[in-house]
Image (cartoon, rainbow, N blue to C red; front, side, top):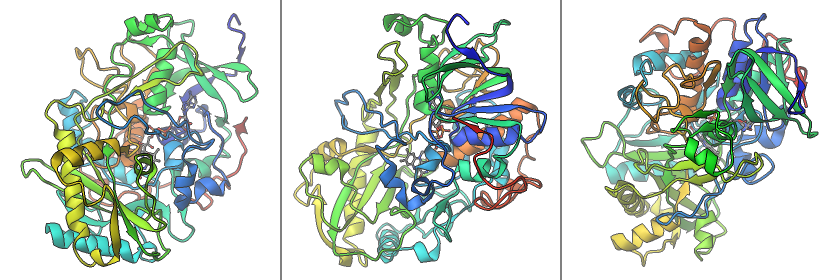
Length: 552
Ligand SMILES: Cc1cc2nc3c(=O)[nH]c(=O)nc-3n(C[C@H](O)[C@H](O)[C@H](O)COP(=O)(O)OP(=O)(O)OC[C@H]3O[C@@H](n4cnc5c(N)ncnc54)[C@H](O)[C@@H]3O)c2cc1C
């Protein structure tokens, strides 16, 4: 071959990225024994890896070999020092995140339809809940820390919001409670996309995993379809992997647009500027970078009880503007001091502490990803443009959040645990002071999305059609968080899982679950499709999770 790579055997579907969405596609598409499925995953396996499987260890995976650890370009109105963790391991971010699991609100999906994503209405999408294989349930009683209980009580009393026993029972506008998590309380193990979907089917002979194999350029086949991908293995050798039906890009909201642009598919002017030959001018690739930004307020405490599922088990939703259909401010309550950003600003880290992280569910600032050059090994530039919305909505939300957090902290029984406010400290009180602190100490909730969004015909920045097909090309779709036109109000992982389940039907032509049927009302993961593997972490009908079928 002219590019020096060797040809691999052909597959029906090649999935680039064995992450949250990629695992769903791999498991579902390989249910048909005649369908050859290959997953190209840059990271290692999570099978048997306790560091990854143990949910509470999530924080120790950040900025390790399992993490791409992207940095950002300077954020004049925000924090320029945030490390944007993105997982590099089978299961993707569902293998190193906190697995907080929220079904998206109907209004979030209606917003997608208004933006041209026809067919993604709540009546069509929400019934896919019944197909989710992850075990999702509210934090188990034994994992509920007394201080988190008291946070919930204080929040409810201060703000006159309801206690929410199950955030997925039905849509809500405000409330406080323990989150639902995709985990097994008995073992503390994840019910990640990998554990729930892939582990039970690893012995399928028609499923090949190419691990520690990085895709770095898409290529056309002889018929002009974009169904080939150049992949570099851990030993440095290149192989061309070929899809006879479709190439499915699931590398996530940073790496999918990066891969497209490295392949010459993106804004033509930008690609020429950085020395990449243009294959197709698709102006929207890398645009519409979304996130849920948050800030942080930290208190010192005495030693706390040890029990927890993952140290951020409870939260609070507030609707400040009654005209909004849902919450417009959210808080995670951490029973550890999360001080990565406050320490840099000179604040001390107490030996024991808690924090609240007010975040912006519907952030209005929009960013962009671009290439710094043609070398696949060079990190792309991420510019979230935090706190740049002209209305000042994002800045206002953080200021309100810091004030509301203080009100909750001043209320018993939470108040009785707290020794002092460490950051920003009680001396900062004006809007200006809280805004300056809130933005400089800001962090990400790790929810980048939107960089290859779907949209209607005639929308010049829509990268995909509502069937998730790359506009103007044949043979390739995108299925991951980059397809979102907007972020859901809530944490997005379940939305990624639902999108992947729906993508399977779009790809195969299989019927969607009945609109408004069984899955529309029940909790996610509570139903199992006949014939699907059993409880995650146990052995499915197709054998023990192992390493057969894997290549390195
Ligand atoms: C620390 C952290 C905590 C989070 N907590 C939560 C939470 O509690 N709840 C929630 O709802 N959301 C949470 N999120 C967000 C959520 O996990 C993600 O939005 C979601 O998992 C993204 O899924 P994805 O399929 O788009 O991408 P990913 O799951 O990131 O999958 C992408 C995969 O592609 C692979 N890959 C990348 N580039 C290449 C390449 N060139 N070749 C081959 N493979 C490649 C990666 O290794 C990865 O496995 C969190 C995220 C992080 C990082």
